[in-house]
Length: 328
Ligand SMILES: Nc1nc2c(ncn2[C@@H]2O[C@H](COP(=O)(O)OP(=O)(O)OP(=O)(O)O)[C@@H](O)[C@H]2O)c(=O)[nH]1
Ligand SMILES: [Mg+2]
Ligand SMILES: [Zn+2]
Image (cartoon, rainbow, N blue to C red; front, side, top):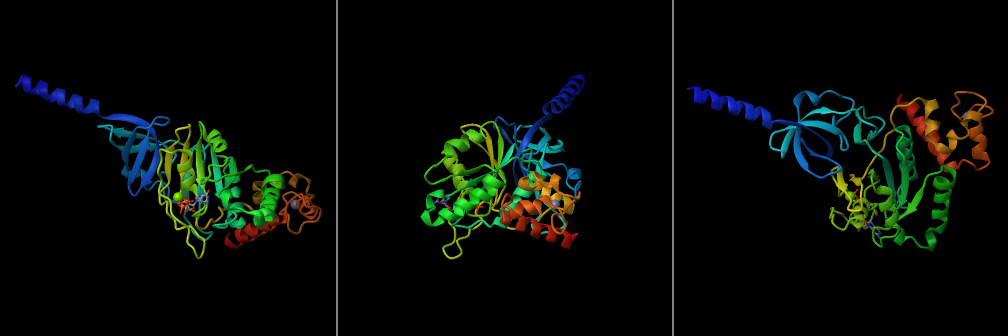
Protein backbone atom coordinates (compact mmCIF):
# COMPACT_ATOMS: atom_id res chain seq x y z
CA UNK A 1 0.00 0.00 0.00
CA UNK A 2 2.75 2.42 1.03
CA UNK A 3 4.50 1.65 -2.25
CA UNK A 4 1.36 2.46 -4.20
CA UNK A 5 0.92 5.82 -2.41
CA UNK A 6 4.54 6.58 -3.14
CA UNK A 7 4.03 5.76 -6.76
CA UNK A 8 0.89 7.94 -6.99
CA UNK A 9 2.70 10.81 -5.31
CA UNK A 10 5.47 10.45 -7.83
CA UNK A 11 2.96 10.52 -10.72
CA UNK A 12 1.27 13.69 -9.44
CA UNK A 13 4.64 15.31 -8.87
CA UNK A 14 5.79 14.37 -12.36
CA UNK A 15 2.60 15.68 -13.96
CA UNK A 16 2.99 19.00 -12.19
CA UNK A 17 6.64 19.12 -13.16
CA UNK A 18 5.94 18.50 -16.82
CA UNK A 19 3.57 21.45 -17.24
CA UNK A 20 5.81 24.36 -18.13
CA UNK A 21 5.10 28.04 -18.66
CA UNK A 22 6.89 29.54 -21.64
CA UNK A 23 6.94 32.77 -23.58
CA UNK A 24 7.03 33.34 -27.30
CA UNK A 25 5.86 35.38 -30.28
CA UNK A 26 2.79 34.56 -32.36
CA UNK A 27 4.13 33.84 -35.85
CA UNK A 28 0.91 32.69 -37.51
CA UNK A 29 -2.79 32.59 -36.74
CA UNK A 30 -5.14 30.23 -38.54
CA UNK A 31 -8.69 29.74 -37.28
CA UNK A 32 -8.39 28.74 -33.65
CA UNK A 33 -4.69 27.89 -33.80
CA UNK A 34 -1.78 30.14 -33.04
CA UNK A 35 1.75 29.16 -33.92
CA UNK A 36 4.08 30.53 -31.28
CA UNK A 37 7.87 30.63 -31.58
CA UNK A 38 10.70 31.50 -29.23
CA UNK A 39 12.10 34.27 -31.46
CA UNK A 40 14.82 34.98 -32.37
CA UNK A 41 15.04 31.17 -32.45
CA UNK A 42 12.57 29.08 -34.35
CA UNK A 43 10.91 26.40 -32.19
CA UNK A 44 7.27 26.52 -33.16
CA UNK A 45 4.56 25.38 -30.73
CA UNK A 46 0.91 25.07 -31.80
CA UNK A 47 -1.31 26.82 -29.27
CA UNK A 48 -4.96 27.53 -28.60
CA UNK A 49 -6.33 30.40 -26.62
CA UNK A 50 -7.59 30.00 -23.07
CA UNK A 51 -11.36 30.68 -23.21
CA UNK A 52 -11.60 33.82 -21.13
CA UNK A 53 -8.94 35.63 -23.16
CA UNK A 54 -11.13 35.34 -26.24
CA UNK A 55 -13.77 37.94 -25.50
CA UNK A 56 -11.69 40.45 -23.61
CA UNK A 57 -11.63 43.03 -26.35
CA UNK A 58 -14.68 43.43 -28.54
CA UNK A 59 -13.40 46.45 -30.50
CA UNK A 60 -11.07 44.27 -32.51
CA UNK A 61 -12.00 41.10 -34.35
CA UNK A 62 -8.83 39.35 -33.25
CA UNK A 63 -7.77 39.34 -29.58
CA UNK A 64 -4.30 38.12 -30.55
CA UNK A 65 -2.32 39.21 -33.58
CA UNK A 66 0.85 38.12 -35.29
CA UNK A 67 3.78 39.69 -33.45
CA UNK A 68 2.14 39.47 -30.03
CA UNK A 69 4.32 38.28 -27.18
CA UNK A 70 2.40 35.65 -25.26
CA UNK A 71 2.72 33.37 -22.25
CA UNK A 72 1.62 29.78 -22.78
CA UNK A 73 1.48 26.53 -20.87
CA UNK A 74 2.81 23.39 -22.48
CA UNK A 75 3.37 19.84 -21.39
CA UNK A 76 4.97 18.36 -24.47
CA UNK A 77 6.66 21.38 -26.06
CA UNK A 78 4.60 20.76 -29.20
CA UNK A 79 1.17 22.06 -28.21
CA UNK A 80 0.15 24.65 -25.66
CA UNK A 81 -2.50 26.97 -24.25
CA UNK A 82 -2.02 30.74 -24.37
CA UNK A 83 -2.82 32.22 -20.98
CA UNK A 84 -1.63 35.79 -21.28
CA UNK A 85 -0.77 38.45 -23.87
CA UNK A 86 1.94 40.96 -23.04
CA UNK A 87 1.28 44.65 -23.55
CA UNK A 88 2.05 45.59 -27.15
CA UNK A 89 5.00 47.90 -27.91
CA UNK A 90 2.94 49.08 -30.89
CA UNK A 91 0.45 47.70 -33.37
CA UNK A 92 -1.24 48.60 -36.60
CA UNK A 93 -4.98 48.38 -37.00
CA UNK A 94 -7.19 48.35 -40.06
CA UNK A 95 -10.88 48.91 -40.49
CA UNK A 96 -12.12 47.56 -43.80
CA UNK A 97 -14.33 50.63 -44.29
CA UNK A 98 -15.11 53.68 -42.22
CA UNK A 99 -18.50 52.20 -41.53
CA UNK A 100 -17.27 49.00 -39.94
CA UNK A 101 -17.39 49.20 -36.18
CA UNK A 102 -14.81 46.57 -35.56
CA UNK A 103 -11.17 46.79 -36.47
CA UNK A 104 -8.59 44.14 -37.22
CA UNK A 105 -5.13 44.23 -35.67
CA UNK A 106 -2.82 43.57 -38.60
CA UNK A 107 0.30 42.95 -36.51
CA UNK A 108 2.05 44.12 -33.38
CA UNK A 109 5.48 44.85 -31.92
CA UNK A 110 6.80 46.01 -35.27
CA UNK A 111 10.14 47.68 -35.83
CA UNK A 112 9.07 49.01 -39.21
CA UNK A 113 6.60 48.64 -42.06
CA UNK A 114 7.35 48.41 -45.78
CA UNK A 115 4.54 49.57 -47.99
CA UNK A 116 4.97 47.66 -51.24
CA UNK A 117 3.46 49.54 -54.15
CA UNK A 118 3.46 49.23 -57.93
CA UNK A 119 2.80 52.12 -60.29
CA UNK A 120 1.48 49.65 -62.83
CA UNK A 121 0.54 45.92 -63.00
CA UNK A 122 -1.44 46.57 -60.75
CA UNK A 123 -1.66 50.29 -60.10
CA UNK A 124 -1.64 51.17 -56.41
CA UNK A 125 -4.05 54.03 -55.80
CA UNK A 126 -2.62 57.11 -54.07
CA UNK A 127 -5.64 57.14 -51.78
CA UNK A 128 -4.64 53.74 -50.44
CA UNK A 129 -1.00 54.81 -50.03
CA UNK A 130 -1.97 57.91 -48.07
CA UNK A 131 -4.28 56.01 -45.76
CA UNK A 132 -1.63 53.43 -45.04
CA UNK A 133 1.00 56.09 -44.37
CA UNK A 134 -1.35 58.05 -42.09
CA UNK A 135 -2.07 54.89 -40.10
CA UNK A 136 1.66 54.17 -39.68
CA UNK A 137 2.27 57.76 -38.57
CA UNK A 138 -0.63 57.60 -36.12
CA UNK A 139 0.81 54.42 -34.63
CA UNK A 140 4.39 55.74 -34.77
CA UNK A 141 5.63 52.91 -36.93
CA UNK A 142 8.56 53.87 -39.20
CA UNK A 143 7.54 53.22 -42.78
CA UNK A 144 9.38 52.94 -46.10
CA UNK A 145 7.94 52.64 -49.58
CA UNK A 146 9.14 49.86 -51.86
CA UNK A 147 8.34 50.61 -55.49
CA UNK A 148 8.27 47.04 -56.76
CA UNK A 149 8.22 45.51 -60.26
CA UNK A 150 10.52 48.28 -61.44
CA UNK A 151 11.69 45.86 -64.15
CA UNK A 152 8.32 46.51 -65.84
CA UNK A 153 8.68 50.29 -65.86
CA UNK A 154 9.63 51.90 -69.15
CA UNK A 155 10.39 55.40 -70.39
CA UNK A 156 6.60 55.92 -70.64
CA UNK A 157 6.41 55.78 -66.85
CA UNK A 158 9.15 58.37 -66.34
CA UNK A 159 6.86 61.30 -65.57
CA UNK A 160 4.81 59.21 -63.16
CA UNK A 161 7.95 57.97 -61.36
CA UNK A 162 9.37 61.50 -61.07
CA UNK A 163 6.13 62.88 -59.67
CA UNK A 164 5.84 60.01 -57.20
CA UNK A 165 9.36 60.67 -55.96
CA UNK A 166 8.59 64.34 -55.64
CA UNK A 167 5.33 63.86 -53.72
CA UNK A 168 6.33 61.04 -51.38
CA UNK A 169 10.11 61.43 -51.32
CA UNK A 170 11.16 65.06 -51.52
CA UNK A 171 8.02 66.66 -50.10
CA UNK A 172 6.65 64.11 -47.63
CA UNK A 173 10.10 62.77 -46.77
CA UNK A 174 9.58 59.02 -47.09
CA UNK A 175 12.37 56.78 -48.24
CA UNK A 176 11.41 55.17 -51.55
CA UNK A 177 13.34 52.12 -52.65
CA UNK A 178 12.76 50.80 -56.18
CA UNK A 179 12.87 46.99 -56.14
CA UNK A 180 12.29 44.00 -58.33
CA UNK A 181 11.59 40.55 -56.98
CA UNK A 182 12.18 39.32 -60.51
CA UNK A 183 15.66 40.71 -61.21
CA UNK A 184 16.71 41.04 -57.57
CA UNK A 185 17.25 44.79 -57.95
CA UNK A 186 18.09 46.48 -54.62
CA UNK A 187 17.36 43.36 -52.61
CA UNK A 188 20.72 43.71 -50.83
CA UNK A 189 19.49 47.03 -49.45
CA UNK A 190 16.23 45.42 -48.32
CA UNK A 191 18.11 42.57 -46.62
CA UNK A 192 20.25 45.11 -44.83
CA UNK A 193 17.20 47.10 -43.69
CA UNK A 194 15.50 43.92 -42.43
CA UNK A 195 18.41 42.60 -40.37
CA UNK A 196 17.65 42.38 -36.62
CA UNK A 197 14.17 43.79 -37.16
CA UNK A 198 10.56 42.68 -37.42
CA UNK A 199 9.25 44.17 -40.67
CA UNK A 200 5.68 44.24 -41.90
CA UNK A 201 5.23 43.81 -45.67
CA UNK A 202 1.96 45.34 -46.70
CA UNK A 203 0.22 46.45 -49.88
CA UNK A 204 -2.65 45.64 -52.20
CA UNK A 205 -2.95 42.19 -53.78
CA UNK A 206 -0.59 41.40 -56.64
CA UNK A 207 2.18 43.94 -55.97
CA UNK A 208 4.59 41.08 -55.30
CA UNK A 209 4.93 40.92 -51.52
CA UNK A 210 5.30 37.14 -51.33
CA UNK A 211 7.52 37.02 -54.44
CA UNK A 212 9.79 39.63 -52.90
CA UNK A 213 10.11 37.60 -49.70
CA UNK A 214 10.92 34.47 -51.74
CA UNK A 215 13.58 36.46 -53.58
CA UNK A 216 15.05 37.71 -50.30
CA UNK A 217 15.45 34.16 -49.02
CA UNK A 218 15.74 31.34 -51.54
CA UNK A 219 14.91 28.85 -48.77
CA UNK A 220 11.33 30.14 -48.58
CA UNK A 221 8.71 29.15 -51.10
CA UNK A 222 5.64 31.20 -50.34
CA UNK A 223 2.69 30.79 -52.63
CA UNK A 224 2.40 33.50 -55.27
CA UNK A 225 -0.30 34.13 -57.87
CA UNK A 226 -0.59 35.81 -61.25
CA UNK A 227 -2.46 39.06 -61.64
CA UNK A 228 -5.56 38.93 -63.81
CA UNK A 229 -5.00 39.75 -67.49
CA UNK A 230 -8.02 41.95 -67.84
CA UNK A 231 -8.17 44.04 -64.66
CA UNK A 232 -4.47 43.73 -63.82
CA UNK A 233 -5.39 43.06 -60.24
CA UNK A 234 -4.03 40.52 -57.79
CA UNK A 235 -6.05 37.45 -56.86
CA UNK A 236 -5.60 37.53 -53.09
CA UNK A 237 -3.20 34.61 -53.01
CA UNK A 238 -1.83 35.05 -49.48
CA UNK A 239 -4.60 34.45 -46.96
CA UNK A 240 -2.82 34.48 -43.59
CA UNK A 241 -0.60 36.88 -41.72
CA UNK A 242 2.66 35.06 -41.12
CA UNK A 243 6.15 35.78 -39.81
CA UNK A 244 9.06 34.32 -41.77
CA UNK A 245 12.68 34.23 -40.61
CA UNK A 246 15.19 35.49 -43.17
CA UNK A 247 18.50 33.68 -43.59
CA UNK A 248 20.21 37.06 -43.86
CA UNK A 249 18.74 38.05 -40.47
CA UNK A 250 15.52 39.56 -39.20
CA UNK A 251 11.89 38.56 -39.58
CA UNK A 252 9.31 39.57 -42.18
CA UNK A 253 5.53 39.43 -41.91
CA UNK A 254 3.84 38.49 -45.17
CA UNK A 255 0.25 39.67 -45.28
CA UNK A 256 -2.83 39.19 -47.44
CA UNK A 257 -3.37 42.01 -49.94
CA UNK A 258 -5.35 44.82 -48.36
CA UNK A 259 -8.64 45.73 -50.03
CA UNK A 260 -10.20 48.75 -48.33
CA UNK A 261 -8.54 50.85 -45.72
CA UNK A 262 -10.90 52.79 -43.47
CA UNK A 263 -9.43 55.41 -41.20
CA UNK A 264 -9.55 55.09 -37.48
CA UNK A 265 -11.42 57.62 -35.51
CA UNK A 266 -9.28 60.66 -34.87
CA UNK A 267 -10.00 64.28 -34.14
CA UNK A 268 -10.16 66.40 -37.33
CA UNK A 269 -7.41 68.69 -36.05
CA UNK A 270 -5.22 65.66 -35.42
CA UNK A 271 -5.20 64.32 -38.99
CA UNK A 272 -2.69 66.82 -40.42
CA UNK A 273 -0.15 65.73 -37.81
CA UNK A 274 0.10 62.44 -39.70
CA UNK A 275 1.19 64.12 -42.94
CA UNK A 276 4.89 64.84 -42.21
CA UNK A 277 5.05 67.72 -44.71
CA UNK A 278 2.04 69.38 -43.02
CA UNK A 279 3.37 68.74 -39.54
CA UNK A 280 6.47 70.73 -40.50
CA UNK A 281 4.50 73.91 -41.23
CA UNK A 282 1.29 73.79 -39.20
CA UNK A 283 2.81 75.60 -36.22
CA UNK A 284 2.82 78.70 -38.43
CA UNK A 285 -0.96 78.70 -38.94
CA UNK A 286 -2.60 81.78 -37.43
CA UNK A 287 -5.22 79.74 -35.60
CA UNK A 288 -4.62 76.68 -33.45
CA UNK A 289 -6.12 74.21 -33.88
CA UNK A 290 -6.48 74.79 -37.60
CA UNK A 291 -8.16 72.33 -39.96
CA UNK A 292 -6.33 73.91 -42.92
CA UNK A 293 -9.55 74.26 -44.86
CA UNK A 294 -11.19 77.68 -44.44
CA UNK A 295 -9.13 79.43 -41.77
CA UNK A 296 -7.37 82.68 -42.74
CA UNK A 297 -3.60 82.80 -42.34
CA UNK A 298 -3.22 79.05 -42.81
CA UNK A 299 0.41 78.10 -43.36
CA UNK A 300 -0.49 74.71 -44.81
CA UNK A 301 -2.63 76.27 -47.53
CA UNK A 302 0.18 78.72 -48.38
CA UNK A 303 2.60 75.80 -48.61
CA UNK A 304 0.21 74.06 -51.02
CA UNK A 305 0.02 77.22 -53.11
CA UNK A 306 3.78 77.56 -53.38
CA UNK A 307 4.24 73.84 -54.08
CA UNK A 308 6.05 72.86 -50.87
CA UNK A 309 3.13 70.60 -50.03
CA UNK A 310 1.97 68.63 -53.07
CA UNK A 311 -1.63 69.05 -54.16
CA UNK A 312 -2.23 65.30 -54.36
CA UNK A 313 -1.49 64.93 -50.69
CA UNK A 314 -3.50 67.97 -49.70
CA UNK A 315 -6.55 66.69 -51.62
CA UNK A 316 -6.09 63.32 -49.98
CA UNK A 317 -6.05 65.08 -46.64
CA UNK A 318 -9.26 66.93 -47.46
CA UNK A 319 -11.04 63.77 -48.56
CA UNK A 320 -10.01 61.92 -45.39
CA UNK A 321 -11.13 64.87 -43.30
CA UNK A 322 -14.48 64.95 -45.00
CA UNK A 323 -14.95 61.24 -44.54
CA UNK A 324 -14.02 61.41 -40.88
CA UNK A 325 -16.56 64.12 -40.26
CA UNK A 326 -19.25 62.25 -42.14
CA UNK A 327 -18.91 59.13 -40.00
CA UNK A 328 -18.41 60.80 -36.69
N1 LIG B 1 7.77 41.55 -63.50
C1 LIG B 1 7.66 41.33 -62.20
N2 LIG B 1 6.68 40.56 -61.71
C2 LIG B 1 6.59 40.37 -60.39
C3 LIG B 1 7.50 40.95 -59.48
N3 LIG B 1 7.15 40.60 -58.21
C4 LIG B 1 6.07 39.80 -58.35
N4 LIG B 1 5.73 39.67 -59.65
C5 LIG B 1 4.58 38.90 -60.17
O1 LIG B 1 3.38 39.48 -59.67
C6 LIG B 1 2.41 38.49 -59.38
C7 LIG B 1 1.90 38.63 -57.95
O2 LIG B 1 2.91 38.29 -57.05
P1 LIG B 1 2.63 37.86 -55.54
O3 LIG B 1 3.97 37.73 -54.89
O4 LIG B 1 1.72 36.71 -55.45
O5 LIG B 1 1.88 39.17 -55.00
P2 LIG B 1 1.34 39.46 -53.51
O6 LIG B 1 1.56 40.90 -53.26
O7 LIG B 1 1.95 38.52 -52.54
O8 LIG B 1 -0.22 39.19 -53.68
P3 LIG B 1 -1.31 38.73 -52.55
O9 LIG B 1 -0.77 37.58 -51.80
O10 LIG B 1 -2.51 38.38 -53.37
O11 LIG B 1 -1.55 39.93 -51.70
C8 LIG B 1 3.09 37.15 -59.69
O12 LIG B 1 2.72 36.74 -60.99
C9 LIG B 1 4.56 37.48 -59.64
O13 LIG B 1 5.33 36.64 -60.45
C10 LIG B 1 8.53 41.79 -60.02
O14 LIG B 1 9.37 42.37 -59.32
N5 LIG B 1 8.56 41.94 -61.38
MG1 LIG C 1 1.13 37.17 -51.25
ZN1 LIG D 1 -3.73 75.73 -41.16
